[in-house]
Length: 412
Picture 1 (cartoon, rainbow, N blue to C red):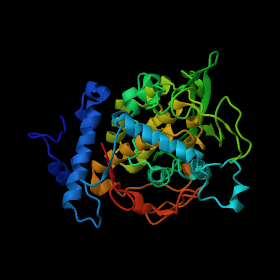
Picture 2 (picture 1 turned 120 degrees about the horizontal axis):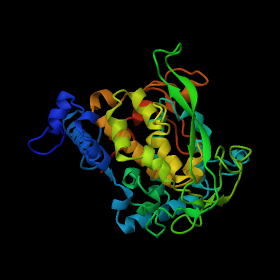
Picture 3 (picture 1 turned 60 degrees about the vertical axis):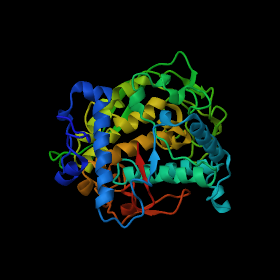
Picture 4 (picture 1 turned 135 degrees about the vertical axis):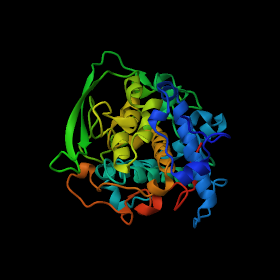
């Protein structure tokens, strides 16, 4: 069975009223693999949102017609792509705007406005991953970065996203990384003679069979081959970009001795299809949305905390396939591709929410500490999410919908 929004099929109104949500079993393996299912499901979710905005009584000026439209990177025109990367360069060379002189001595590696975003992510890493606010915090974080591109650096477009499923077979050949002036910069220079890397990843299990059924952590062992780069970005935007912060926990490299140490260096990438072929395919992202009806399962699966064959999830896969700063748990926003990757993560959550708007828009589950270690209280929608040097703190419940609160955008 297919769910579409065309004449003769299930309409958005029918889907919304009846709360009919597609299932993986509704699609063939071929449709899952080639993206047909993903685009179909995304279309259903978008139609649901359009219906909801038209017929629900929202206290909001945001409409389907006036919402910003976030597009996939390769579908932007060249002028928009160039103006976007120019604005990013502006942010990476602009002096900090929020850090005070008194704070500067504690953050010696913060040299730019962009570094303030990186430092904020470092500061809150252990309370914004495998937590209730993982999705909402990152949604808001990339929104504030987009606002700075506009307000501080003259960008007039909308934040794009990177659909890595389009590139899952060979991400090193993606136009996103082809190194021309309209790309997000090239892969890193190829470094030969490297061995496989062993990585121990933390996994959270939710099981009624455990003595503590909420969260128990254990490790999964992963060994992966080197990628197709490994050195400095060679061409295109960011080939001259200086990364100032991190890495804190990157394999096979010299990590900094303190969280905010000044560590100037080139932007490194090591684009690796080993990750995308396993964790970032169209099948992966579609199954993430359709196989997890509860928020606790959805956010766990997305982050790779559920299932022995899903050790990274689409979130972790997107980070690790890029390599370099993106593979550093703490300082990953140092690579601007972070924000396009998390645009796709946010799109995936938005699709999941809009498949069942009434039940899912404000669905949260979990505490404010990674893996609930140390134990902390269950979060509520009235809790405040901290944004450090980025912006003022935000109420959790105000950042749950892309068409309410500070947001008014949708995804193409």
